[in-house]
Image (tube, rainbow, N blue to C red; front, side, top):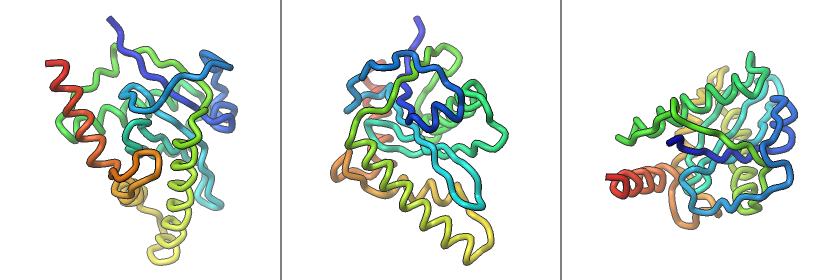
Length: 174
């Protein structure tokens, strides 16, 4: 049996990737779902376009550079590699080979608000890195985001929350 991931895309990101949404006007409940991720377009002048993707239940962040990725299929392949690496980094298991991805429009205002806050923080962190070092260390910037509590998962740090949820999921499945 195939596992399912629900990917909630912003309108701008869906348009840039030329993604046909699976359910154009269908809203899927997001809070607390391990299979639910949200993605938005993030543009920085002089640094190009990125996708900010956050796990809906923990707000675990993933950053994907969009340079050279002109299609939804290219983006999705890279995203699934990042999700798999995220699971593996904390001892979890993620089978990207046996997966169905359902793309919908973003609708959860709390998650959108937290993503907007994350984009604001990334913008300022990137500007600081460019000013001080001449380049942006996106790995360090993502790590900082993973250690920043956001409103949609009150009182939780994304890195700790993601690890807790993956451990709980693994315990449930065993």
